[in-house]
Image 1 (cartoon, chains in turn brown, purple):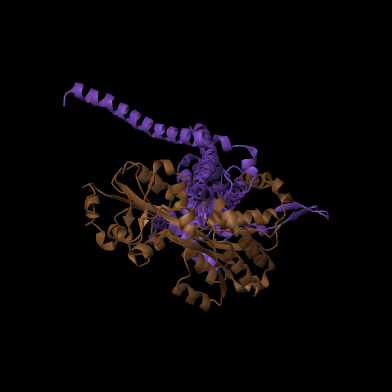
Image 2 (tube, rainbow over the protein chains, first blue to last red):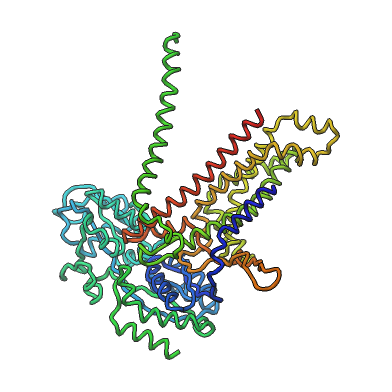
Length: 305
Length: 300
């Protein structure tokens, strides 16, 4: 086995050049939603470049992130929905107090195939009839959604049950987070949904707005009517920001542990840096920034601590 | 059946076999070409020396590939001694009884357990109970558990293939059992054991699921502490084991993250990462094939 151990050792030596890179003493620990990951990654990258402490970011999902956060394992938790009562209780039990900050908006887009000529808009009620648990195995044709739609088979695509997007959509449309029909093509990877919908003329599905914006040529966006009396609204930067695209736009949050703010100075300066730069960085990675006064309010909140 | 028909069947079967083999190769080739076309532009030195970034053309795999090397070394250091020792025991020493049967059945079962289950096990035992955090050591331990059955089975297979005449000759010269194993059987089985180890490692290198369950990170702008650093004082080398307790990310996780991003540029990064991972796996498998070839030549 001598040869083998020497192979191992030389393997270790091989990446010796990295020894010059110094590691900061206590990195900032962040975990949570993969939706917000790109924003937090961008902030962490810039913060590091400006000489700030190192921050590392995981993608355990909103729920998984809170589990760790409430055990005191992380300093900051990314969340694509507000914290749930169950998680508030867990945090209390774990002795973790926190501050909540909104950092950006995300719009959910409902899309169909470009060859779809019949859908000009959908109402929330129609979306509900499409996605409600009771629709399972009964609502299968487009003609069942609205009279006048052709009698074609409806092919549904959506995110899997672990995603915050799924939680948010089901809550906004079906009235209860997590309640959805199960007989649709599910993927945690939104690019898979894009490919599925762009390849199937009878398809309909939903995912984050950024994925539509990057694939405009192979998808058709569906304007949404909140109720029959209102105008149909196309999701865009403007309509999400001014709140007229309802109910499928959502705020994205970070939750910061008070303990970490108190005991790790780097966490406080990181949070401050986050709020000061989130408007530019969130747009850069495909999300929609909050109105400036929201960030100012967050900063004030942090100051008053 | 008449003779002619038998002959036709006889000549058709290899044809079908050849077609199926080529089909598999064609799929692999298509995959490779596709990944190469998407990713070759990103394959430059800075791709290997940069940390991930929000800008696809500046993003790199430094933390990912260094993490992968760390995890692979840790996995090997744990799985190889345990796996080979267990293989030797079960093949050479263990008596045939119910307990041995029980162990053997369970090893075979473990080899078939989905890898994500190992991740959950590791999260419970290594991270939560033993407080090893989401460290290189936790990741290495999980992957070591994952590949242990493969190494044990490969070791046994290798020992079994050593001709009994070698053992008989050794005993005839008065060697003890341990001497026989240490100086005759193991050297004869060495290449085959290495083949098994390398194949096990090339399975471990592509694993994502157990490490994601463990909570391995995705964005990490620093590397595990290097085990050996130069120092000014005697003996001029500073050895540190801190790296085993540092957080990490690996190539498959980085690729997984890039593939799911909306910007097209990240898909090119992902393809480049896939090429790197594939090349490493090919090289490892190539070494395994070479060793097997060598051992076959020697024994026959």
